[in-house]
Each structure stands twice: as C-alpha cells, then as structure tokens.
Length: 291
Ligand SMILES: [Mn+2]
Image 1 (spheres, rainbow, N blue to C red):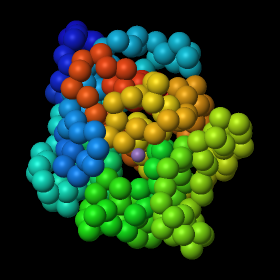
Image 2 (cartoon, helix red, strand yellow):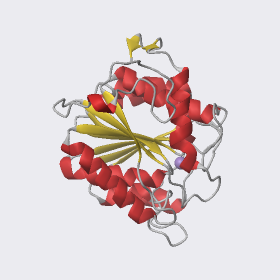
Image 3 (tube, rainbow, N blue to C red):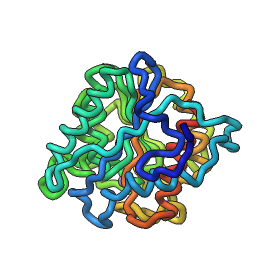
Image 4 (cartoon, rainbow, N blue to C red):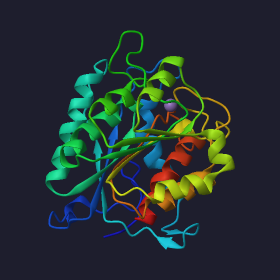
C-alpha cells in the first residue's frame, strides 16, 4: 500500500479504512460536516472539510515543531450527511455519527462547518463523560440564548452546551461579546475566560491553568480565534486574535490531558491553498502529531 498518496478527500497520513481494527482502543476518526445554514455574515463554511483536508498534503510526516512523527492511529470517515436549512436535525445526525464511532472506541475529530455542529459531538460525549470540560477557543463567546429568535445557531451553541450541565467551560481568545452574554457569564461559576490580550501577555498562566484540568476534555476551535491576518476567511472575522505559536503551546499542553474529542470549525472558503484552510489543517496535523 502507498502511504501519503495524494487523495484530497481524505486527511493526509490517515490510515486506510480497510485496515480499521475495531479492537484498537485508542483510535481517532475524522468526520467532515459541510454545513453553514445559520451563518450570519461570511458564508462558505460548508466547503471547510474539503479545503482543510486538501491543505493537509502540504505537511511532512515529521512535525519539526514538536520533533514528532505523525503517529496517531487515525482514519478519515468522509463527510457526514447534513440537512441544509435545518440546524437541529443536522446536529442530531452528527450526534448519531459520533455515537457510532464511540461504539468502537473511536474519538472524533470534526472538520466544520459552522460552529453549531460541535453540539452534535458534545451531546453524544456528555452521555459517556458526565464531568466533561469544554475548552473553547474563539473570538466570540457563542453564549447568546437565541440569535434573531433561533435557539440553534452558530452564535448560541455554547449556551446549549452549557445547559447540558458540563463540568466547566473554558473560553480562550475572546474579544467580542454582548452585554447579555457578559451578564450570563457573571451569573455562572463554571465559566472561565481568557481574553485574546491575556493570551498574548500571559500565555504561561493559561498553560498552567490548562495543565491542572483533571476531567475529560472536549476541545473546540473556531478559526476566528486566530488573528485575521492568518485566518481571514471565517464566518465572523474580528481583529487582534491569537497567533499560530499560541495555538502550538495550547495544543502541546492539552495533548498531555484526556482529550475525548475535538473540532476545528468555521473555515469559510472554497479556495484550495487558502491560508485559513492551511492554518486549520495545521491545527489538526499538530494535534495528530502530539497525541
Ligand atoms: Mn467565533
């Protein structure tokens, strides 16, 4: 078998599905979610899965940043079905997909798609891990109770996640929120915030905080957490975000913890080689090198 043959429908270095060994308990499964129906500004996240996968072929099997080879046991299961125009039903489909993977002890890596798709994964994993912690990297809090009357939307998704009764929600890179969201955060004792300027000035404090987490973690990364000079094509760009190096430090720290699922969402472009797609792909590549 030839490894790393250019096959842009699958993430580079992923194992052949015909080799899937269901007895292996530490496997990861990539699923693309080509969905962007509640996007309010820049549409196109439905193309995220294909451009992020395609960009993965620009990386070498040896990850020089971490001095590690991509050794993770991981498969690319292709894209999930979605229902354009129906966020809730799409979230339910994602949940059942992840549930299917869980039956074989395969942990999910989602490529979005708009941010609402994360709820499908978290809905499922919360049933397995009652004390789940969510580490959420984003320019936005996504804690609105509704967005223009919609309960299921990219801007409300962390509110729906919080309602599940998670252990804690750690928001990193925040630099845009409403006064209602801030009020809600003040009323909760299990939401921790590290704003974007804190990441730049006090990254060591944040890494120390993350290193103390004892519970299972779901990691969700909205591409707009980055500064828009390195990830311009996202649904709702906001200036003054975090750097690639900040992300490398955070991933390196979290890779030592018990991550039970992750996603990279809101890559909103249909251009091959787009820098947002390359940056998104690098997150997954780094993660797969570190675990
Ligand atoms: Mn966002």
